[in-house]
Every structure is written in C-alpha cells, then in structure tokens.
Amino acid sequence: MARSKRMLNFVRPCKNMKRTEPTHPHGITPSPFRAFTLIELLVVIAIIAILAAMLLPALSSAKEKAQRTQCVNNNRQIGVAAHMYCGDNRDRLPFPNWNPPWLPGWLYDPKTSGTPPNLDVAPYNVNPQLAYEGGLLWQYVKNRGVYRCPLDATNNVNYKGRANKLSTYVMNGSVCGYGALAPQGNTYQQAAFRQDAFMMWEPDDISPVLGVNNYNDASSYPDPNQDFGLGRRHGKIGGIVLGFSGTVQMIKYADWKREATDVNKNRLWCNPGTANGH
Image 1 (cartoon, rainbow, N blue to C red):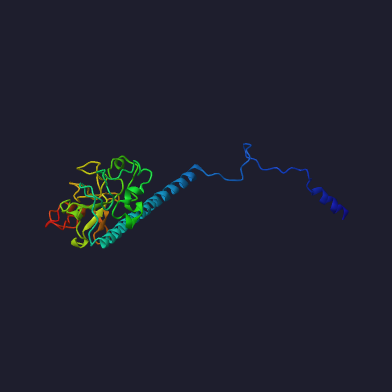
Image 2: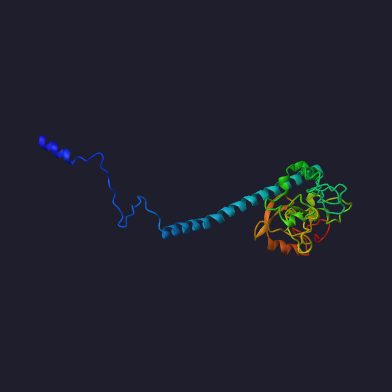
C-alpha cells in the first residue's frame, strides 16, 4: 500500500504547473471563435438586399393605401357636410367660391379682399382656422385637416404659388352654372343634379393652360384644357372624386379625359341650366 501511494503522488500534477495550449505552426495562437469568410459575408449582404427589395414595395404600397383611405374619408366628410348644408337651406348647395363675384362660398369668405384668405399673412399665419371659419361648410366640418389630401405637399414651389392654399379639393362650377346662374351667389338644388355626377375632385398642381395658378379659387371647370382636371396624386390609374349623392369613388384618368372633352351632358359637365351640361 505504501508503494502505491508513492506512485500516486508521483503522477499528481503540481499546483504550480502551467497548462500549455497548442500553438499554430507559425507561432500564432488560434482564436476559439471562427471568423466569417468574405464569401459568407457577401452572401449575407445579398440575402438582406433581396429581403429589403421584397419588403420595401409592400411597405410603400401600404403607406399609399393608408393615404388614399384618408383622402376618401376627407371627401366623405365634405359630402356629409354639403348634404347637411342642403338640409338647412332648402336643398340649395353651398356657393362654390366661383369668382368673381367674391361671395362667401363652401370653403371661405373672401370678405373685401377679392382673393382667398392668405395663410402666409396675419391674422391667418397666427391662427389659420380663422381663414376657414367664414366658409359655408365649416360649421359642419370644424376640422382643417379634412380639407387637405395627405399627398398634397405644402413645401414646394407650386404650393407656394397658389392663391388658394386652404384646400386640396375644388368644387364643380356647375353648382352655380359656371357663374351663369342669377342672381350672383345663387346655386342649384342638390336634387337638380344627376346623382352619379361629380361634385368635387382634386386637380393637378400644374394646369396646361394656367400654369401653376391651379388654385386661384375653390371651384373649377372639369376640362383640363380649360381649367384644372383630375390630379395624379393617387397614382397612374386614376383619382378620387366626390359625387353629388355623397359617394366617393376612383375614376380612371382616361374616363375623366373622355368625359371632359365630351360636348354632351355627363358626370363632369352636369350644369342643370343647360341642355349639354356646359
């Protein structure tokens, strides 16, 4: 037994003995972690790029859909407000701010200025709501955001050149017979219009005839060669319109152009006072 104990003591490691690690042939101690190779990194980057290319269009589409939905809701609220106004005014629609004669209309009261309220000068630059409070629909809307499409940029040169910065949307001038209905400031009853006709839309930023002066007031002819046609903020296919019935829909640009140049009464040219709607 004594001999066995001596043998065990002989093989027992010394407390001060240092453990040696295997060394690289060139004297470099290998790392316990394996690094990525260049090819592996390139593969990872390529995968991330492919995923981003797949996800970004979907995110962009979702954002555009949300903005379009907000614009549709704006039009619906304006349509409800217009119908409430008709209910309080013997079915007469609000004056479309067809100027001259510079009378109170659906969007604003020009007072004595002979122009739409300028949001860049006092008192409207301090309290923009004052510019809307004279509008005939304000008492039913009471929300400035309803008057503006979320895609209507306010930080570009075209916007700054507008006379009317209050609203993205304009009313069909047929409401007052394109200025021919007497006396001045008078409007047709809502029931006088075909209910699938278009009461409001948002025009392009630039008119082929009038240049950047698209928003000179709050109403328009529907023919883009004469005034401000349907805008292209909502894509390459079509734009959003509000009908006299209060319905909101998308209409294709090709359909708008076809009816805008038609000499007969249709959904755009819908003046109740004439045979051809013009």
